Length: 140
Image 1 (cartoon, rainbow, N blue to C red):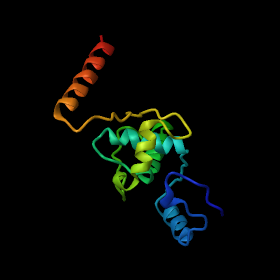
Image 2: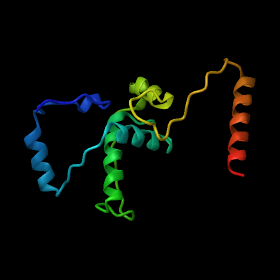
Image 3: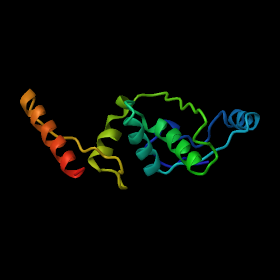
Image 4: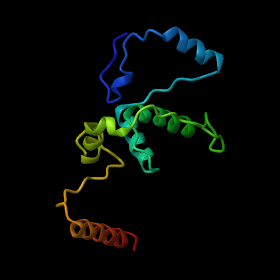
């Protein structure tokens, strides 16, 4: 098996040594496998970030899978689900910056473009006031 390039580089494994163990565990617990496109994993990671987490692309894969399973009715919205995040987004700042700048090869649905500001409190306050005003006008 040849692994394809992915933003989730830690799971870019062409011939996993523990594939038999993974298959056995899936069967034992009636598990299922879903895939995620690069856009799905990136958007899912960014959507997860809105909860206060700062997700890595690998957690984005798990979240994208969860979103698909919810959408397809394989997991009911009333069920409790745990997604384990094994890394932090700070280890993948290049991925985060490219996503929010819209510099990836696909549309970034939840991009929150960074704003360059001088290191002054008044500049931050002014930028926040401007953003809040734009939000108010949009909601009118």
